[in-house]
Amino acid sequence: MRLLAAEGLAVSRGGLRVIEGLGFTLDAGEALVLRGPNGIGKTTLLRCIAGLQPPAAGSIVLAEDAVAYAAHADGIKPALSVAENLAFWARVFGGTGAAAALRAMDLEALADRPAGALSAGQKRRLGLARLMVTGRPLWVLDEPTVSLDAASTLRFAEVVRAHLDGGGAALMATHIELGIAGARALDLTPYRASGAAPARPHSFNEAFA
Figure 1 (cartoon, rainbow, N blue to C red):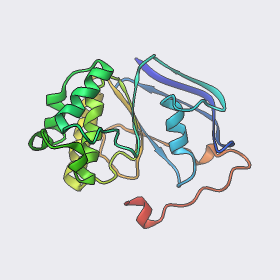
Figure 2: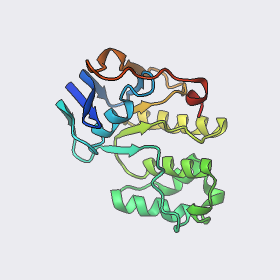
Figure 3: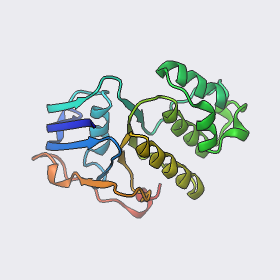
């Protein structure tokens, strides 16, 4: 089942095109990892797929209410507990599975803690657990492992694999190798718009921030 198709796609940042002529598809059970140096337009592309900004040209075809988006902000309510956050998002999206999400991201011991009192890594785990209660088949993920330690990164990779096995799909921008069998890579470098400023190569610190 096809969950996403992009054709002749161009996206802009600050009024200037950064990517153009891009086309790709994503089917149920597939993961696609965006590659390319910083500034190439990965985040801008993901924002377009998530419906947060329109494309400059081309088409994006996906089912209505198909996307769950996780970006650099964790999307949590600091005054609510961990469990209340997941219950809130489950109600918003009409999804289920809060208890399973707590277990999957090792948050059960923190269920009653206010989200505002969590560490950066714990907040990130909660933000990613939110994906599991949306019921959305297409996960669009921008650097999802930022602030995660090695153990939490492995847990998240297991969550993504389970999502794919259940008929979902994932479109990700990440510098971390998650070990997702069969994941495809899409290098955006050949699609850099003519006249766009050259993208910046990754530095060691940026790649592992």
